[in-house]
Length: 114
Image (cartoon, rainbow, N blue to C red; front, side, top):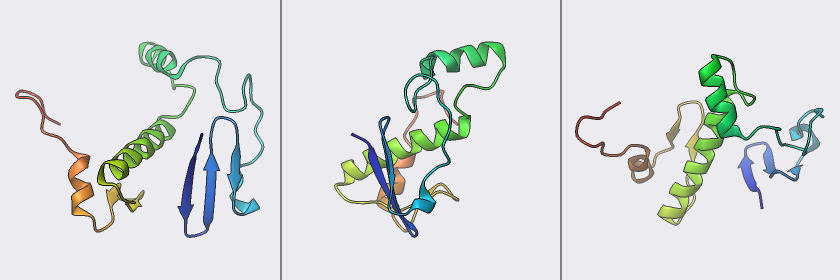
């Protein structure tokens, strides 16, 4: 299936099977992989648990995991709102969109807070 991102310099489309871009300059450098093209040998959730227990870095950098989860959340928010949303990755906020911003937090159960 995959996902497509549009930006000021073009677009990229990625999945576990492919990586396409509107311009060759947006293509990633060739990387050596083990197993599948973009796969690791250990499931991400097990690798995360092992990393926490061993105090080591996980296979996938935490920043990449954060970006991946953010992308999924943004897609879900856009689906919920039934429209596109604009996101500023530098500030981690929606651009001029108070309605979408409401989805970034939730009401916590009594006794729990950030």
